[in-house]
Image (cartoon, rainbow, N blue to C red; front, side, top):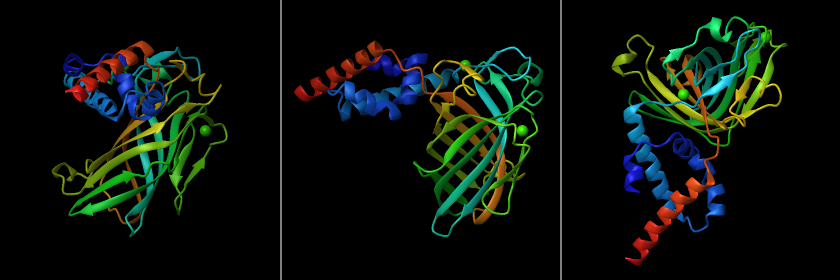
Length: 295
Ligand SMILES: [Ca+2]
Ligand SMILES: [Ca+2]
């Protein structure tokens, strides 16, 4: 436990820790003696390991793209972009979020190297975008508003735009109106799992209206075969989770609002770690909890 907690996690451990909340039930079926205490110890070990790792460097999981057009395959680990969102805030503390995100650039080497359009073809040979909906709740305290997405609501769809000509603009109601979407190919689907964010117009950095809050969300991510698996070609199978991190420009969280900001996407969630490493980790913790019970 001590060496695990004080050492940075290996990439395999990190992958498993990222996946843990979603994989816990599956693993517990096969390790019935890994009880609630041990599960919580695993979460703590993951958190400590992640803390130790984050003190060193940020690591994003690599993926390989086979781009539309004549460009060569490339490896990246993040996609940056811009979003526009239609949000409808109710007086009962709930709101609906309907978001259109357009990918601007692929980034490689753990977020350090932005790849050019000439290297990836994005924005010249093709476009990528996502449509996301979720229901959420919000609470206000002074100038600050906190948001929490409601799990089990909404959806994510991820699209390839081979003509690089699609535009979505907010319609009069809750929906976006798209143009030139006839050539677009849906390449992945997802379900929102969790998300939260905040807005604070009193934030000193909100003066220019550009950094007034932030949000993050996690969705499942399932490539559609063959259109998705022939674009995101590695790893195989592809990551099962998508993580989005966005920045919020200033807006008033009442009624219907159209807001915007930047939003980055990374993936994780597979491959499933080697059974031996899970079993060893589990056995160590079981031993620890048994010793505690005896004591
Ligand atoms: Ca990486
Ligand atoms: Ca199009």
